[in-house]
Length: 495
Image (tube, one colour):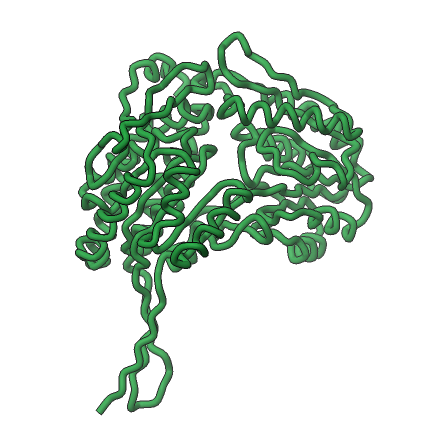
């Protein structure tokens, strides 16, 4: 990777900017477009089709027709598996192009998109493909004069609204299980990062997945997204994004046809370091990575660092050193580990919260400045706040940037109370060498995922999702596939 000139390659990169409906690239019916801008330099990447109600109606009609035809939904499991395996292999073959699209569109470091985002997208599709012919239905234990079957069938038309921070990966988490179950899927990518979804739809068609099984409608949430959520012939809406938008989508699902609604929303994840931690350097370096990775634009970012008093000073000293290894730079440079903020709105939000933290009395220990303005890009230094109390907004509210709030605690019980003092419950982390502390703490934490002596561990075998206002439903694992199915009970009386 170090020997590749990604900047030159990105300048000559070819990509599509249209909607993908019924196996074809097309303009929006209205002819409207919206600008797609590279956050690393402010340059226009292209004008993307701005889909609205008319495009949604067309895509849903196509999806329903294809679903009812059985060309995908009724395909033998082994055949659907083979098709998705071929698709995954084609994604893997196009790793570099997918990685570059993620980098220029979302500002993500090329080292990350090559090392994680693109390969993880292919792995997700391949994993779900492998699961297809491993899933069994049930025969209920009943008397000999009856046969009771419990079977699962695809839901029908699934609409997936996916975020801008991990555009391809988050899409694959919805797309993989929904396609594996036999559904027709319509993806509405974020208007801030639409390019990879369009490209992945082209690859799906190239791999032989039937036209209309996977469609992409770029556009805005209040237009295409809302139209999908309210559509009477969409059977499921699945979403990753903010809690505020998730609540709106739940309302739309109820106002329309009571479609299944699975929301993966915000987080304000506590990262707890106990004084008996085995490797304090590893814990501190991981804490820095947990807030700096992907510019802090991560729903599971370890944004609240809770440190036991006995080691507080030591942790702060080491943290200042660790944070300084995370510095913004050109996302297309292989050495960069902090890229560009997605857009001006998000940059302003981060800077506003840094000002709020100072105004509320927290101490800005380092960072927090906008930098590299001469590039035309959107960059801000990761920062650390100390003297943070539970009433402060930087302790309570999701910022979606590299803003770390550090709070001290004395006892296990206090740590649990502080950690659970949140409307969110997506992830949490615990560092301790005491197995009793690890188990008691992880059991008490109200979070969908708890990391013990690591952060962000896991793979496709583990379900992902949250408690409380972090959402419902689960991505990844076999539990995700079942979410995209209907359960049917069939009772047969025997002669």
